[in-house]
Length: 248
Image 1 (tube, helix red, strand yellow):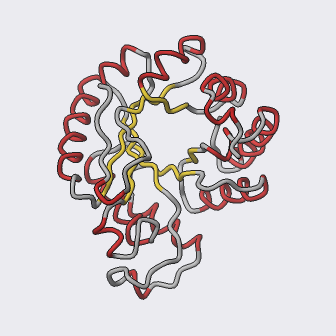
Image 2 (cartoon, one colour):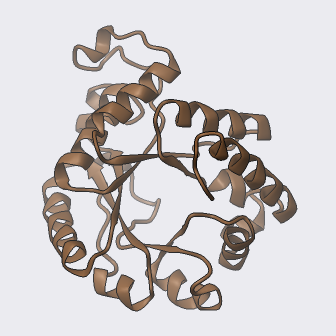
Image 3 (spheres, rainbow, N blue to C red):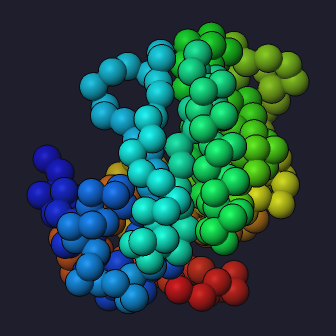
């Protein structure tokens, strides 16, 4: 069972503060209700859109919930936007992202793109976790104008992928490097992924940074641990990042 603290925003904000996180990503409702106490001490990425987990991913869409003006009002350091690459609704989401990007440029706000392959067309070409899908999503992020892109780690599935991906047989580290290259000058943050033991978390951070990532976005690998364990693991992660010249 997940730790109840995984759903406790106060827990998350306190961990971000004591763990010296670069930022915490919250939707507008949580940011308004919980972050006031931490204002000026915990950098905020305001997530502008989101969806529930109830519908399946076939027609995934992430509706807009907040604006760049909300981010300015709340003192955010950046905004976040989810783009589902490959769904039947991607044209609407790309147009919406274009308007968000223009607002960000006007108001001097960096934009972090959660670039996630989704939908039946993606599944027909191997699935959302394939190198093909994530490599494509990385390139889309740069071309639509994101400053930073959040990506999942690609898996080793390739049987149904288009060429040349179907013929590739690359180790995990090579797949990560390929994705970072495809993002070009868009900085890459990899998702923390499924729950791992502490050694697995630290090892993943090192592997992603060696591939050229700018950092990691962690969720369940930290929120679903007791506070003291999560804080101790955060400090181990900082130790790895410091080896790549990254300050907390």
